[in-house]
Structure formats: structure tokens, C-alpha cells
Amino acid sequence: MRGIFRCILPAACVGLLWVTPATAASAPSLVEEGNRLFREGKLPEALEKYRAAQAADPKAAAALHYNIGNVLYRQGEFDKAYEEYRQAFSARERDLAQGARFNAGNAHFSNHNWPEAIRNYQEALRLNPTDQDAKKNLELALLQMQEEQKKKQQQQDQKNKDQNDDQQQKKKEPQKQDQQNNGNDKRPDQGTPPPDQPPTKANEKERLSSEEAKRILDAMRRQDKPPTDQLKVPKPEKRPEKDW
Image (cartoon, rainbow, N blue to C red):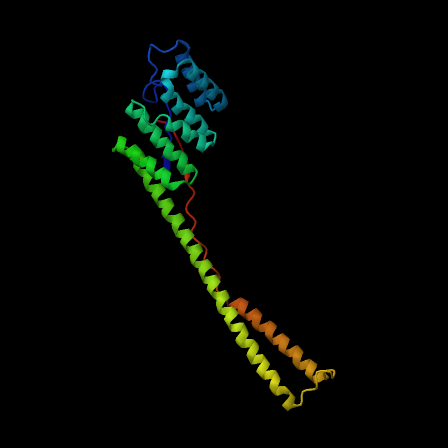
């Protein structure tokens, strides 16, 4: 499922940055130049123009924060992009505020911060309940979060199982040792040589056979151990790219 990335561009979007005629004369031209550079993929240059327009026209702060956020988002700086979008949440223009919430959700989605992505998509839907793109992205974020929680639970279950197996093994070891000691106590009655007497060839052969048998049993246990099921990995998300 593909998210929809929203930017403010002439003709393709809702107006040109909400710049009013009363703003500084250089601001509209800087914004227009920044938009052109943005379309051409010249992100550092576009950012420079938006920053210059921001300095020339502080009254257009919300819209310019939004455009700066778009540049940072395209550059993969999702945390910084969110901080810019956040400055436009309270914009008087409803479309601008809704777009900022939507793209903020995209920024958190790209960082795999599912709770914050969900929260911002929900806010975008509150501002525009008919936004199908926000609904789709919200559903995808919810699915990704559920998959991640499931994966963590499986890992925790496996960890608990391994710890329990270790505890059970430690309990069996003393019992096994006691059985071996009891068996050794009976050997003198069966003609076992004293401890200070070198073992005979027969005893050495018996000891080697015992070690060989233990090695074979260990190898068989390793072969019989069922493989751990691979955890289901969530499908990789597609970064929102389409302009509106």
C-alpha cells in the first residue's frame, strides 16, 4: 500500500503557500523558485529559498514550515521534518493544518513510530473525515504495529522457553551426578582396579566406548531438536512519494 506525500506546489496544490499581497515583495518569488527546485529534486537549493522566504515574510511561517518539512522529509530527516510540520498544526487554513498532520504521520511512519503515526493520521481524519489516503495509511500503521507487537511477544515466549529449558537441565545434572556416583561405589565389588593402579586395556576400551556413546547421543539430540520457526516479518513499507 502506498502512502500519499503532500506538498504545496502551484497548480497541483491548494494555492501558493497562502502568501498574501501584503507580504514582502521578494517572498512570493522566493517561494516560486523554491517550489521549482523542489519539483526538480534540488532539495538543498529549495530549502535555501524557503528559508530566505521565511526570513522575508514571517507572517507566512506556517506554510513555509510545511514546505521546509517536505524538503527535510525527502532528505530522510524525518525527526526534523516532523518538527517543521508541527509548526503548521495550528494553521488557520484547514487544508494546511490537515496536510501537516498527514505528512507528520508519514514522517513517524518512516521512523516506525507507529503510535505517533496513528495519532497524526487520526488527527488528519478529524480535520477531513473523507480523506481516503489518511484512512489507508492509518490502517497500514495499525497493521504494522500489530505485527511488531506479535513479533516481540514471540521473541519473549522463546526467551522464556529457553530459560525454562536451562533451569530444567540444571535440575537434572545433580541427579545424573548422583547416579554416576552410586554406580562408581559398586565397581570395587566387581573387581575394579584401585585408584592408584593403571587401568587395564579392557577398562580403557570401556571408557573410550562410553565417551563415544555420549558423543553419538549428543549428536543425535542436536539432530532431533526442531528448528525454531522463523518469525513473520512485516512487509516493508513504501515511502509516501506521490504529490497532490
